[in-house]
Length: 433
Ligand SMILES: [Zn+2]
Image 1 (tube, rainbow, N blue to C red):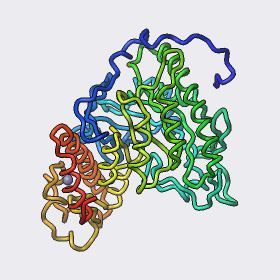
Image 2 (image 1 turned 60 degrees about the horizontal axis):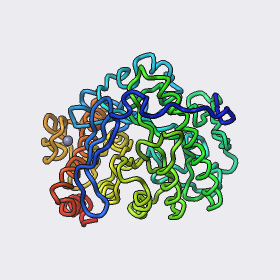
Image 3 (image 1 turned 180 degrees about the horizontal axis):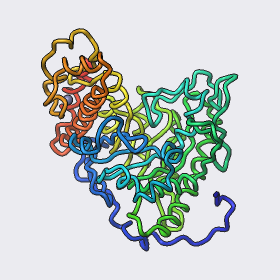
Image 4 (image 1 turned 60 degrees about the vertical axis):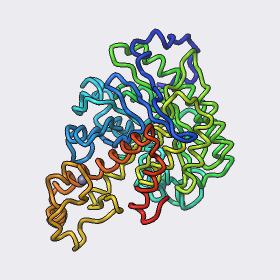
């Protein structure tokens, strides 16, 4: 259902919703102009920030047990609303007791709004969006068309002012998402942190289109807050779920600042966003600049999530610019293709040099894989196409990124952020970044 044309009715005051007062964010240390360490409080436990949040798209981190994710230090997991809506359905996950209960993950969880996937998992779009990202840091089109669908390709997503109509990537059935539907899906899924429904644009969209999309995203944010308030009050039998607004605006400073200012100050009957996501098209070389524009404008006391990054240099840049949490599918996706991160860079374990490396992937790694298995064994598993290869390498890669961000978090109060950045980027890339 949509409520765009519904009669405005008074929303319940936020303070009257049980548990909402307990959902918060506290800054515990700072470094430089923008970097901060802190703690996000959720009903499923705290998240010490900065934190890397591994992605479990369909309520599973592919090939890895939730117990192993706990063991490798993951504080929270992020699942995709779009995928879980299509299969098995948010109603079923709700009936199971919510995402965490359904997948046997006791810790905090996030869901994205589904906006990125409904607009990107189309035939025309898919060709031109980087598959490395869940959140669209490298989103761009080859064609430069405003609707980002290549000539002659079937258009799988249609955006209008009320929502998005799209075809299922599973069977081609037609579905529709609106801000209200996204909120209903995410409330059903029951994650601790949800994101407002936003319109994905690309770097190749015209300035005029970016302005229109941004205004649409602003109006959708208001509708998300209203629906979130209604559902929070209706669903007091469930733990309180935070709603974070998503800042778009592509590469334009004025649009990014305006969006951050608008959503940062947005209030609907006393309800405001509990945190913020920074989404959309970002080029790697402008990452720190764009995140900086946004964090300049956002309220200081609310957490900020940067969608879709996990590269070593990007994490330092984003944290220095004031981002608190991050998610990315890359660590698990590349692991299944035999690529692993090491302190001295990314390597591929199918290479002949690993055939007789009777030592861990990375001597400095403390993960379960590196403390129990040799690179030679994992090389063999990949050559023999054994499933265990994916499990062992995913554990290693997720641990690598989680641990790096843990080290950055420890470096902030210690005053070692700059030294750690120089040391780790120099080791990883061959020169400091
Ligand atoms: Zn390891």
